[in-house]
Length: 258
Image (cartoon, rainbow, N blue to C red; front, top):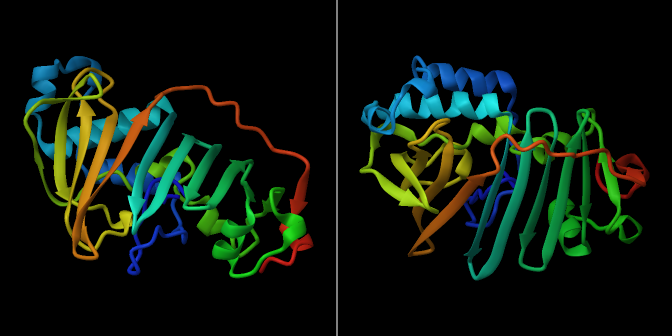
């Protein structure tokens, strides 16, 4: 929510459910493209905040991958509808709970299989059809299914990190405090995966090692009004116990499109 995992706004200004492909290779390539990475433990908070914006993001993403897990969450209103998303992301497993208005979906990724459970409203919006016997049941979506990519993206940690870095020319902010953590911000245009047409994005990175992202704030004009969306990052390095759910219903056994 990605998005799922975090918030993505489509051209119609609704949270975007379509997910684009992402991988560990893509995330590592992103880190490398931002420049050489210094050892986090060697940089004092003052020295770290003095580094270039690209270097700060490169260090932050590299350390995030090393810690191997994180919780990202957001809660806001979009076009008058309540929107919330909480995602526990690890390198090979993850789970997201997404609520948009009256619709809710839980997505779990285990052993390269996506499992979803959702209510009738979400099913109708996600698939364009509904299958009442499959509502509120775990549905297994294999990699060979056409729905796999859009549900899998932005759930695993490497994919989630691909939507963190601001785009365009980057600059740093003054040192500030976010959720009782001393941080430095990296500001640019919104990451393309957020689905915002314009506006700004700032990622706040902890000054203390391991210098991981603490919060991302993206702002844009939505339907003539400025909207600000906030995603928080916490529980870095947590050992999540995300397992295959059960009982499960293969999507091929439902009336949902394959």
